[in-house]
Length: 317
Image (cartoon, rainbow, N blue to C red; front, top):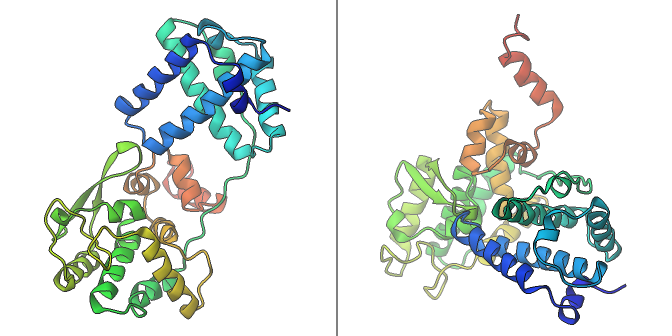
């Protein structure tokens, strides 16, 4: 069966559809602040969708038809994607991109796109995060610098993993800090996915770890340069932190899931298990929806019911 992405070259999209797609992608970048990787993925997904429609419907069409397609055409596209081996999770993401594009197009042109916007995507089971235990996280922070060949590198690796676990940062967020952030304030302003900013409290342990690294670092740290440096003075490659954690987890007997991102999982899970508020944790992680935080922290039904019974007035009546 013909791949619609390859077909897009043999059967070009209409100029109107191509222009609309380009305008929408610019809108995502400029007004919604979407990350470049997100914009690229959405662009690929919608391009494939439009190419399929051009092939499926026997020719190129203007934008008016894109908001009033029958449900059968949308189902045919999804069936085609599944037949190509696209996973349910990837197809759900692609459908989200198609709906986003269609909603924007309908708003722009004053069309009713209810049929497409109400379509249901494939069901898939979300992968639950695998946090470290509290003892495992503590052991990782205490030992990650032990295999480093120089003291300043040991201090650097310890500082980074302390930020990941102590502040719930993504590795890209930690390594994106400039030297202007040192000494760390009581609250960090972090720019995360999609350009969204959030405020994250800084633990004394994280502040001390970064200060210790900065004292030992052999390179000049100008305010506008990266805070964390590689062995030759350039920006630190995140793979080096992953390798340091890999060596440490093997020494400690921790599971293979003990990765830099697992420390972010651990931050959220351990806060929740200690009685942290789910909404507050959502804000600390920078999640747009609470459902994402629930999956991130592996909240189970028993935990939610316990919170409900303790907090809801009717449950306490």
